[in-house]
Image (tube, each protein chain N blue to C red):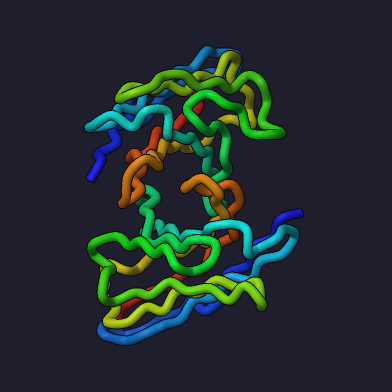
Length: 107
Length: 117
């Protein structure tokens, strides 16, 4: 199975901060990586697909980069609505696997 | 607007069975592959099963193989997950998701399954 490792597990930040989350795959997944945002009690929301393509309707402050085994999600200027947990997921191999999540909390 | 509505969750004893359903609307259901993803309380998301748009391609998480069966009825715009021999570790919120590329573009609100005596 492809192990997805996110870092950090928790990130404390303030409104306006630039935030970067890293996701590493245990083997190459090309660009078959997506990022989700999840708020407590809610379903995940797709933010980015194919590692760097912004899903329709997602604010442009979100961006993704990377290929192969190392990927990043960046929020250029953190907004109050962005405090949430973020997950990466690979869809190159079965079983599909998720990272353990990164919780972005108020500093 | 894409809508996915799960149902069928509840409390079941270890070894018991449940059948989850997901009613889809707002898109041409038969054109999209679908998945079930679960989330145990306080834990990360975990992919469970995938079915191709015509029901022929099936993939499962190893820990549910032989116990869970994913299926669909394109005429009824519905996705199902038959869960047998349930274990405590299957306790989770189960989400159905619409995915054309192997990931969840749209998600339902989830249905809670609790396996406990």
